[in-house]
Amino acid sequence: RIDAVLRRQRDRESSARTYARSFPVVPVRAHGMTIEGADGRHYLDCLSGAGTLALGHNHPVVIEAIRRTVDSGAPLHVLDLATPEKDAFTEALFATLPPAFADRARVHFCGPAGTDAVEAALKLMQTATGRRGLLAFTGAYHGMTTGALAVTGNVAVKEPVAGIAADVTRLPYPYSYRCPFGVGGEWGAELSAAYTERLLDDPSGGVVPPAAMILEAVQGEGGAVPAPDSWLRQMRRITAERGIPLIVDEVQTGVGRTGAFWAVEHSGVIPDAMVMSKAIGGSLPLAVVVYHEDYDGWRPGAHTGTFRGNTLAMAAGTATLRHVAREGLAERAATVGARMTARLDGLRGELPAIGDVRGRGLMIGVELVDPEGEPDSCGARPPAPRTAAGVRAACLDRGLIVELGGRHDSTVRLLPPLVITDEQAEAVLDRLADAIAEVTA
Ligand code: PMP
Figure 1 (cartoon, rainbow, N blue to C red):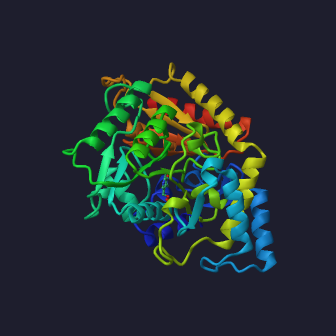
Figure 2 (tube, helix red, strand yellow; figure 1 turned 45 degrees about the horizontal axis):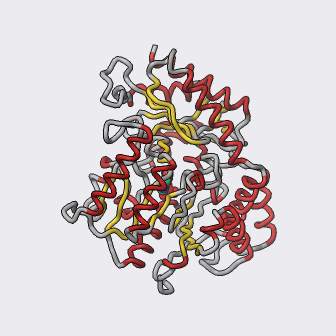
């Protein structure tokens, strides 16, 4: 039966299916951090629906909120009409925002996915500024619809699609390990900021007048790459001085994952817009853009859509936001994440294929390299995507689901739910270390 399910989906589903290729698992039940396959095997889930499940699978507060809403007879779909569920969600969301941002913010409910919220934010700023150019970073991931794809960095996914990316100026993200300027750390970040500033002011730099800069405070698909807080503050200064709205994409970093409720909070930066999805819907699809009221220049209907916030997603999202705040799960993500990162860092001596361990909170990346290869000017050895794919498979054999990412698909990414227990964290690291040892033996 399991084989038949896998075979039928392979035959019927588009060839673009991804996760189902990497993880030939047929999930039938899930709870917390654990997925049970139809084969009866249990897996520790460090993918969490690509970072969606802040509270893990089927958390009781989420299930209860969904059940209560269904039982109440509330309409499940009412376009963008005012509902008690939307009101509660908006209040819960605004309570999590930095007060200096929340005070003068507006929310726009978007189509269900992160990419919809990115599109909305880009269009909003293009409308507000009358400019069409966009500033985005190397290694960025913002989604798969054409606007979001234009600001995404990865050429392989853009190259086959005609007519995008014309007005995007690509700037160097301060990726410390494979640093764009041959220097890592704060110094590399300073150079990224200096380059950005000079390019923007260079009339021959080819920069189309920008409607916005969009960035991730910690790049997710780019390989769990955190930017120094000082760099984020520099980007805020540079954009503010030039009247360029700053959009921070919190789709993956939000709702406690990086050790603060929103990743911008680490730096104290107040952006002009924040794009949110994934965890805000408590495992159901929901996406919003929250922005400063000064940019609220859309005429009614300027950016519309059928699915503009679903009642069940708002109920599940409200329960999630409140639970993360009430239980201090961002702080927990910081503590457990730091402990996991430290232990992984300690493995580098015995496992030389571990080139870099990085991240923030429970957004962790382990970049695998060829230990025999020549180091570059930053000391980084060549990326090892084949090793990484082998490690992902070896992890699955050990009942651990991890996904890859990064510029070369050579980074193992850990995105466990924020409710991961200490024992589960140890089990994840035991299995991962064992898998790396086996694949690189
Ligand atoms: N922005 C970021 C930072 C993301 O990580 C993602 C998804 N991985 C998106 C946008 C797009 O979200 P979605 O896949 O829901 O369209």
